[in-house]
Image (cartoon, rainbow, N blue to C red; front, side, top):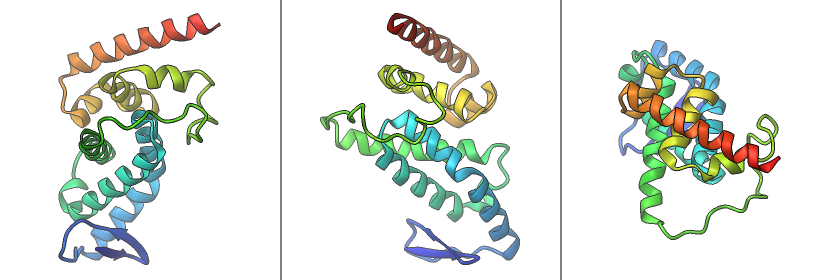
Length: 176
């Protein structure tokens, strides 16, 4: 189902149209424009699949739109959208378990901002560590915001960040 937001068409998973007041619509539209690219890049790096990242951010933004009255009041709506997109993609991955990993030479949205080799080293990390590093570094979330977005304790976020960065340092230092 497609809904229209001030001239912008937003896909929704609901079978019924989502009606927002003009103030709510404006708030969502501003949020969408300010965050969609950043959340997409974070999901693309975390998921290692550009096509999944596009679908995940679309699905997450549609769900945010459908629940904007609640999501818009959160301290960190971008973290909520990231987590919803990550959960959606993880559900699909469970269904497609044996699919081959992406080709390392494939086009990637962050190639221009992340040094060569870093993406490959990041892709080698387990998904939980990759998700924490993406939230903390690419999305620039605090430890508390990352914990809230991923549904973890702050201690778990710190632990995964520490171990993930140590693994990245080790991997990148052996490449030189």
